[in-house]
Image 1 (cartoon, rainbow, N blue to C red):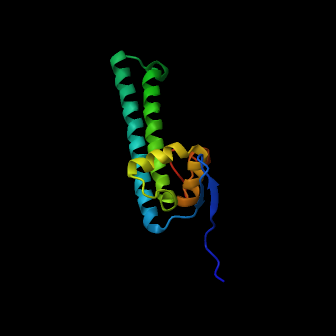
Image 2: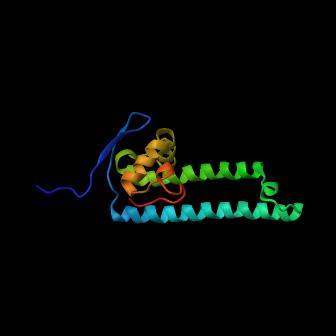
Image 3: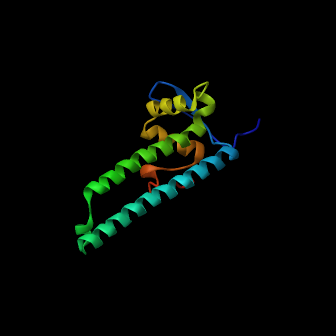
Amino acid sequence: MATEAFSTEEINLLDGSVVELRPLPIGKMKKVMREWLAHTAAVQNKYTEFSKAQSAKAETDGSVDDEDNFDPVAYAKCQSGLQDFQYDALVKLCKYGLESQLKGDRTEKQWTEYLEDTLEDDSISKILEKTAKLSIGENAPNPTTPTAE
């Protein structure tokens, strides 16, 4: 009998659904990688925009010290917008690994809403780790940069 080159893992989602996680085929992995690269570039751009805005503020104020330039309100807005942006991207990436088991006849909007109501941080990490070999959050050297296992 043949031995599988990969292992599967079952996890429970918040709604009680049990899904079997397995590595994605190459065709889906290409899509995941394109999505991830676009996402990380967009995050980098958002941080660059924030940094430029802080520098422009410093030039206008005439302040020199980085602590004088720091605007906590602008930073909070940047972080808040990034957090929503990050979760949207992570849910989108999880879709690739779960669609064959859970999407059914849901529209794309219903599918996204279902996942947003059913996934949480640990599930997202486990799904991306097992299906796409992406480590995010505390497991990654940089939370915005996944690493292949």
